[in-house]
Image (cartoon, rainbow, N blue to C red):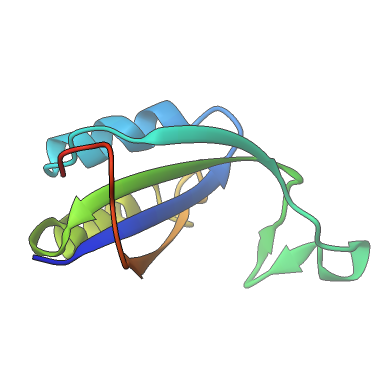
Length: 101
């Protein structure tokens, strides 16, 4: 079975909520990183949303069969329509060593 890395980028302070949502949808765990947006002042609004520079990024490795449900749960509960303003995307992983997914 193939594995994927789900990324969820959200406003500062919401990464814990996203991990709770992901766990309820089947994720075993993840990694939270502090991040900062780099958009210039000319793109401070995107789709009517004010971009804030202080972000958090959640990274979750999941098997393919859990990916879609976890991503949908994040977007439905912490997406751009919420205060978390989370966006999510995934990439297929070539190899994972050191953890059981």
